Length: 598
Image (cartoon, rainbow, N blue to C red; front, top):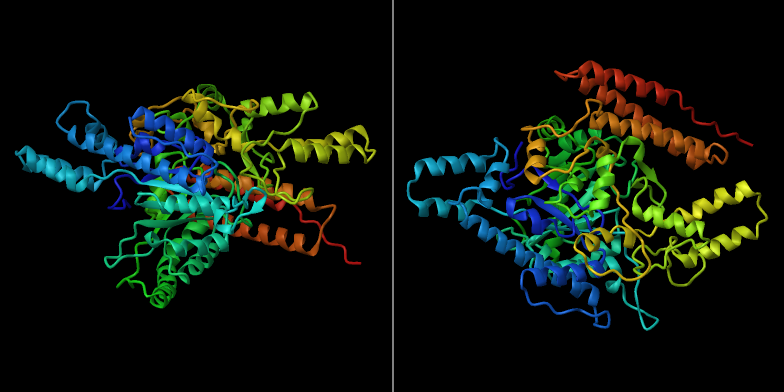
C-alpha cells in the first residue's frame, strides 16, 4: 500500500544526535523523509555555522548569554535546513532535461509501483511540449519531510545565575518552541513516553491547530509501542485540541538507540491491533478533538484529519518491507540502522563506519551504559567505550559532563547531575570504598557505576569529526547505537543501492542466516524475559511476580499469533514455524519463581 502523498514508502527515523542531524539536507530533495534530533543545541549551533558557510547563507552566532538561546539556536538551524532543502529541490526540478541529473536520480529511486513514477512516464509520453512536462514536475514532485525528534523525558530544568527558570525553559520545552517558531511545514516526533506538562505546552502554538482548510503547518507524531498507549496519549492531546497525525510503532527491543521494552507485547500482534481498530481510534479521538476545538473557539474540521500508521524496528529485506505495507496497511516503514552505512544519507565518521561494517551479532548488544537507566543498543569496541575504559583504568572514571542533557539524578545534589559524570561517579565510588567489600564484590558494584557513558558527547561527535569541526574538552570518541539488524549489513552503500534494496531490485544482505524481523524480536524478548527472571529470583515481590506472569502470557499470545500468521506464508514457512517452536520451548523452560507467602 503506497501512500499517495508520499513519493516513497519508507522513511529514515532519528538516529543518535549526529547521525541524522543533516539527513534532510542530503536526501529530502529525493522525496525521502528523515528526522533530526533537536536535543543538542550545541551541536546544532555548530552545524548551522558549517552549513551557512557552505551555502553562503548569512549566519549570526547565538551566544549562551542570549535569552532563550536554546530555542533560538534550534529555530535558526531548522530555518537554514529548510532554505537549503528548498534550494536543492528547485535545482533538482530544473535539471530534468539533463542526462544523469538529480531529477533522473529522483525518478530512478522511486519504486516501480509508484503512481508518481507511472504518471510521469505517461506525462512525457503524452506531451511533446517541454513546458507541459515542466508544469507537471512543479505540481507533482515533492521533497521529503524535514521532521524533528524530541525525547520527552529529556526535559531538564534550567537556571539563570542559580535561579530556576520557568518550565517553558526546560530542555524539551525549549526544543519544542524552537521547532514551533521555525518556518518548517513538518512534524515533531515525540518519543520515550508521555510528558503531560510538555504535551500541554503544545497548546501555545497555533501551527499545530488545523486552519479552515484542515491544513496543519506543524503536526504531531507519537512513537508508541502498543495500541493502549497510543489511545491514552491521543485522547490526552485531543482534549487540548491537538490531533496526532501519525502513530509510529517501534519494536520495543529490535531497534536502535534506547530500547523501551514492552510487557512482552510483540510487533506483529501490535500491528494487527492497530489495523483492526484504526477506525475506532480515529472516531474516538476525533470526537474529543471537536469538543476541545469548540471550547477554544478554533476551526472545527468537517471530517477527521488524516491519520497515518507507520512501523519501524528491525526491518531488513524488501519482503519484510512489502509485508508490513500489504498485511498491516502501513503508510510507511522506517529503515534506520542500515542507513548508517550510507554516507549520502547519514553522518558517521570513517572509523565508526569501518566498525559497523565488521560488526557481527555478538558485537551488537543491549547495554546499561545510558545515564537514563534505560537499556541502550550498543556496538562493542566503539571509540567512546575505548576512551571511557582508559579513564577507568587510570582511576579517572566519569565524564567532565560538558553538555548535561541526560542529567536527571538528585541523589547527592539539589540540581540534577548525570550518572555518567565524574562528579557522580567519584561520590559513588568513594561510598563503595567505605563499605569494606571483598575485591570481587567491589569490582562488580564499581562496574555498574562506571559503565554509564557520556552519550551527549559520544552521540554527537561523529558530525564534528566527519566535517572537521573543532571540538573542545576531553576526548570522548564516538558512541553509536545501531539495532541488532546492523549485523546483516556489512558494506558501505550508495543511496541508490540502499533504496534499490528496500524495493527489492537488488539484495545487499550477504548472509542467508538473517532471521525474520519477527523471529529476531521474539528471541530478544525471550532472552530479556529470562534475564528479568534471574534478576528478580532472589528479591521477588508481588508486583514483580505479576509483571513476569503478564510478560510470559503476552509472549505466549504472540507466539500463537505468529503460528497462525506463518502457516499462511508461501515461502520459508517451515523454517519460520520450526524457529518459532524452538523459541516457544525456550520460553516454556524459563520458570517464574514462586513467591513464598509468610
